[in-house]
Length: 163
Image 1 (cartoon, one colour):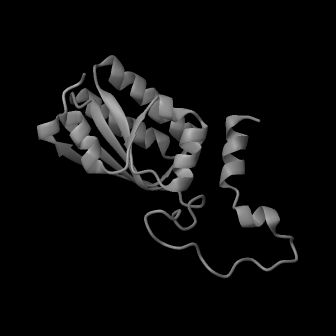
Image 2 (tube, rainbow, N blue to C red):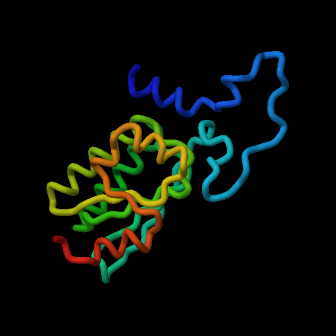
């Protein structure tokens, strides 16, 4: 099974695999909240990117909202390359408000991670939703990226001296 097939399998709603065509669709939308997927995450098409500079820790938070797909990966890549060009290669990527990441999205994050590390920087991942985290760990990305539950912990990790 390829990575793309595996992603589709993971993101196929569990109830849909148990439901027959004769059953009515669920009437209740998914719960809103920080741990629930964004409504209609796979139908969403946009990605909003917000930056926060943390001068004391010499790092920048790049906070994403929406979906990271083949349609939005170039937008993120350009944003990160602009930061790298401005000598800001220590980045906290906030995924708290991301409802879906395609294989292209993960590939983009890995690609820019390589670039930042070549320049002496790093990228850490912050605040993944449970369904994103599940894919992240199953795909073995935890061996590539450091992760933090919240922005403050990630920024503090950049502030601390490296061993």
